[in-house]
Picture 1 (cartoon, rainbow, N blue to C red):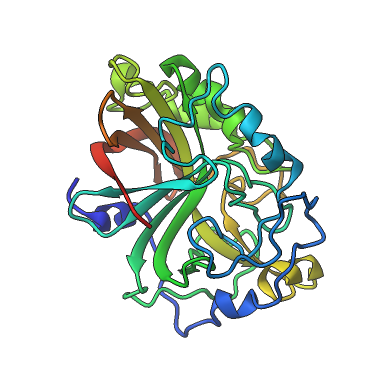
Picture 2 (tube, rainbow, N blue to C red; picture 1 turned 30 degrees about the vertical axis):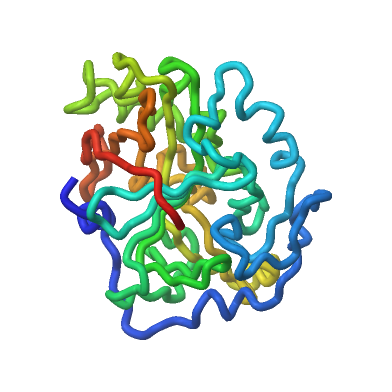
Amino acid sequence: MAGSVLFTAAFIVGAASAPAPSLRAGRSLGGIPSQCDKGPDAVDDCRGQGGSCTPYPFQPDTPVAQNEPTWQDDGRFNTYAFVPYNENSYQAYRPDGDDDVWVVHAHDLSGAQATDCGGDVHYFEHFEELGNPNGVTCDYEKYPAQDNWCYFDHPGTGQTFGQYQCGWWRGYTNAWDAALYNAWDDIGVDAQGANTVKDTAMAWLRNCDNCPEGDGTLHTYRDTNAVAWFTGVLFPWVCSWTDGDTSTIPWTGESGKKCYCDNEPWGGRNSGSDIPNHNLQLIYCAKFDSETGIHCDMIQFNCDGGGCSGASITFRDFWLAEGSF
């Protein structure tokens, strides 16, 4: 791995002409949005309380989150291998010599997404460009706005990042369950309420030009002596606008503005698309005995102006060491 800039290069950030208001300003309202089924451990305002307060400044503790501890280390699941010190928190990982940070959340109530309030279970994040040195902005663009990759103000740490990708993950006791073909529904790759994009994604991944046996639906570390297997998906953080939609106000403080990990079907859900987001990153990792870190592969779709037709491992066997955040 040659540096965090390589990971950023996998996305194309559209430069904007003028800075947009900070998302931090839009989050000043506080409180659990009405779309959330608030639980007993909900936190109305977690700003400044650290890395678990993300991506919004509240933690709703939905029923899905409340159920998380019952399965996360049961049977085929192994969360402990990847969040080994406190499963009510998260584990940060850092590549050697680079400034980016990967954060793997367990049962810490992070991850709720605007505006359906789903996603607060086993959240997964990748932060780059601390301080937003390249001046990435966030302009008005109507849904689906899939090229409107925005900077990110972290509500829990107060830091700003120019690049932010986010999604979800699971840890497994065996490589078969960790294959994305099998883990897809566990992770919740599909956007809630939209058509499934799984069949198309599987077809592209089965045409992986440098994966073992040419098949990216299977875990790339399946033929190793790993003790646990990680499967995660990441998407760009985007903001889109739907004029007149007041349901967004508790989330961003603005009517019509919604920011989220963009697992929406390509072209948006309104047309009934069953095409996966072209920018999906599939992360397969392995944990080996006595190591304080993980070995990972990143797989991405091969796309051009006409669409996608396959996939490739774009970063192979990169090392992520346990770190702080």
